[in-house]
Amino acid sequence: MANGYGVLDLKDNEKEILFEPSVEERPWKDESVKVVLGIGTGLGSCQLTRAPGKIDYHVNSLESGMQRLPLYDEDDKRFDDFL
Image (tube, rainbow, N blue to C red):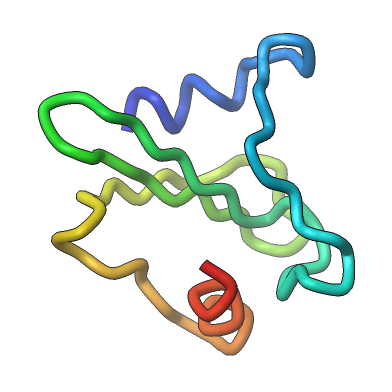
């Protein structure tokens, strides 16, 4: 979770984008969802979600490979299919 909150403070020149889908491939319309993966003692991950019209993100901690992303609505399902 610390990594998830930490990425919110990164400046553009401190980020390395490994993959950026085209606008047509994106199931989401804005940056309301972010995913952070980190290799440590396992493959830790977290999902950052932001409600429409809100500024702050909520960080959901996950362990990749052991737990699926929480799917609440059709946007989440399209994002899961995209992954």
